[in-house]
Length: 328
Length: 294
Image (cartoon, rainbow over all chains, first blue to last red; front, side, top):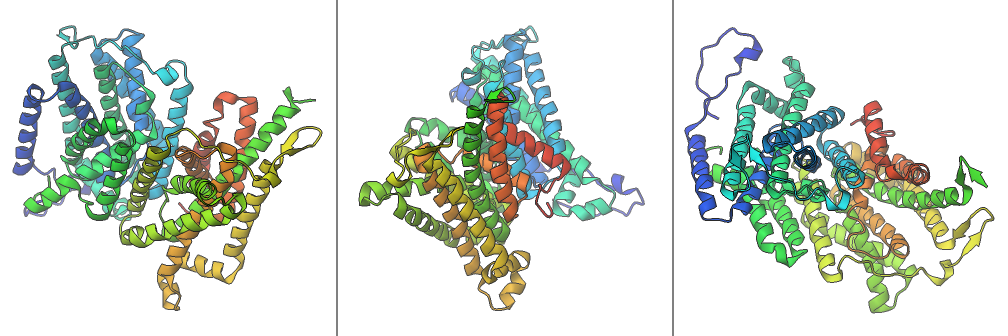
């Protein structure tokens, strides 16, 4: 982060935190990403890209917690999955149009995130990981037994519908650009949250919580808000995914999904802006190519975890940023 | 005879199943607690190591004709050595980092181990017979008590209390507790703390493997037998309070029984009851029932 010399202003502590302007290299990276994503569906199978984009948003939301608050949630599948159910149910049973279905899923995840967050945010480190995992498992068993989720079958044949009464989402390309728009909105919300006075306070809490407290900030409030934003955006990802694949199933609430988002973020680079996106695309491609090999996929994922933790803790984008000497 | 409108037979049957599950919860959460106490990491590979214990017993029978009794010793030693190797080669490099990396590493190890076993043996269970001395059962009048299940409850209780005794009442245990409080100071007194850490990890892992051998005749030998169990055990550990030895034992057995009774009175909640209890405990005591500080 570049720190420019500022004249000392006798302002209250809260206002003294400057929002840094978007650095040029990040703007350039964003432009590259945008161009690639707009051009990609004409070269690569769009359904694959849509899946990767949903997971990229999921990983970005997850990264807000692990990368900027230092909280490892091992239960983020709960938000992805329950939002998927809410969105699929709203679209199929209530006949909601897709924009309202996605909104319902997002709100459901936000509400769930508020409850789980309020219960877990006081704990930290390993306790936090453990407790979020247990809550997610509770949601999993609930989804397995509840009537409206369809149990083992899930909610199938969800109609994609017509967005805002104009865009027919059954067209693959239309659907793709809607997913891209949803992803970009989510991405920018995460970016804005990080690069704001709020984000600076989060980082301060991560670095030195007692110090932040002594400056008059209430760490638990900030952490809870970050948790709710993260859960809500994970919900947006899950809700969109349910509309794209016309399916909400137990896979998305299972704890292996929580592990997968950790893997994406770790591989891409925790605490980097673009890392989770790259990580998501890498992991989804890996799944795509190893799908026929059955449990070899699990083995490879496990090996990536081990290798990343032992030797590659900055992740792809983290290492790239270090080479370029610019945070990406 | 009925109690609260439930046949006594069913009630005692579920009580026994609860005690059995509780025995496994207690042994697994005890191992997790011992490891956490000294290494400050959550051993995510605990479920995989429990599964490995059961498989070692299975291999010993298939390849060497060694039955249940030798396996009770062989499996913990073999899997414990695997734990020692894991600690020496990988975990050791992570102690200077955030403890979360230990969790992520062991999670990766669990995925690899479970994936390898599933590749080789599929996901259906392999049968493993209880030893002839422990087959059959007793008719207690109000219920039938299978000998093997009674053995599991008694044996695991003995192991748990033995571990508690060693840690809380012996000189070795005193070193261990001291190293948990302040490793640097203990090392300054000339005690080899790194070796103690390695052995402690090996011991915790061995406990998981022992539980695996005990479980083999009841649940069969299955590559995924530990995958979902371990998450329940995490909740048990959170309820009991991480790092508390007696807390792990008491909450382990207690929650097993509570879960068993839930199956009788409100079967829909039997999968979630432990997580609900966890949420309630966290509201009242964030550090767990027996935990010191969170």
